[in-house]
Length: 549
Image 1 (spheres, helix red, strand yellow):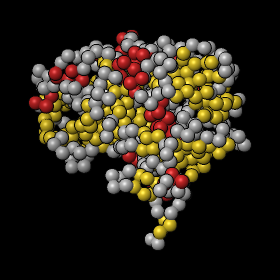
Image 2 (cartoon, helix red, strand yellow; image 1 turned 180 degrees about the vertical axis):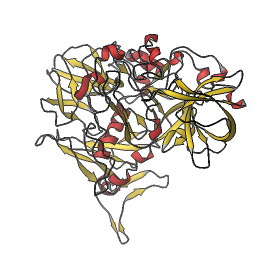
Image 3 (cartoon, one colour; image 1 turned 60 degrees about the horizontal axis):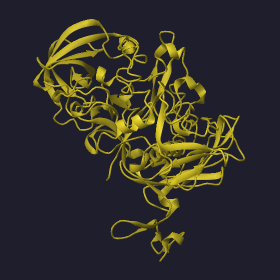
Image 4 (spheres, one colour; image 1 turned 135 degrees about the vertical axis):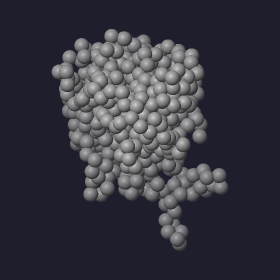
């Protein structure tokens, strides 16, 4: 029986949801029962809002998005999961709560790392054998002054010779023995920190040139042309780079890595300085961390370099087209809206759906060139405390600089718009002067991830002889592609800007926008008008790990 032609089945017990063989392979599935997605029309109306389609109950439970959770991993091997409500700590803290001696050493010292509105911090020390290495350097701990009061402190320095850790916090407690919960090792000792997508899922689309386009997701392959989105671990923010190797076993896993390895870690050591790796900004650590480039992602590297750095760990790749698209659609389907910059609203609709957006994010600012050379703004750990949840954390205005609301979506710190551009791999493009179309090239074979367009089995014809403007529509084909097809002077279609030109050299694709782009930033903001060798101080990349399970 050809199940691809079956639209519904009826048996005495009721409607069939799916049919699978004894190995668990889906032979047929009822889309209206096991899939959910969005439909939109950019032909007859200018709105970013979408219609929810499929099983409306799945729009409430969000079975794909709800599997996203932050973990610590070494290559493809997950070491442990972070707490769902606070990624600074372990989900299972068994064996990591100890009674330790704490000594108060100062109550009035400037901050070393933590950059809050009040930069005066309280200092304590702990001496114990667990501090014979750097496992907990930059980690968070909880000090319980009674059975219920957990004072969160941060380890800013470790003297491994004397096995002493130095803490800073906003809490005063006298010297004595306290129950201490040790947080996650986030500096690379135990591995990298990223979002585990929880398993494979499927994605497909119906392209009507903007006239009721549809994108679908499901845990099951409901149509023959649906693409499988493999399970990935995606860095919580743009990627850092180990510029200089530690070559030191006291640093654990990261201490064994070679120089110029891309890693998703939270580490303020100068060996992992972010941005353009310029030490001139180091002086702002603990004073204005949005200027300092310690503890942040690298920028100012070309595509080939970003790719080679990312591939140095087991399963490592740059964030690439298919995964970038899958996560973007996961957001759009959850909120049924293309406009990620709508005001944040933590309340569900009366029907039980998510609404609003994540706010303007890290966009705009005063004299950003002198502020930090348009390099990375948000430290990679800024919203760790929000865990696997969604929310925003406000960085108050200061030092003649505006306030920013940092968007956090399901474990992602600074979700993918604003701050700095994200270079997307496997998304090369070239303007064809004969067709007068911009052609996009990609492959399904990760071994072909390179800057050569001749070995890419897929090509998509995009915009013609057109410059930049507000994105009106994208080509989605039947796999959920995101390739600009129409631009407009009207912001209200996607609320994302597109940069295009007719230069015929091979170009790369940057996504999301940078702070200096202001309102033009957006989840579908794409920059396709620069050559493959470009390296920008405001351009970074994200790193993923492909899991084969």
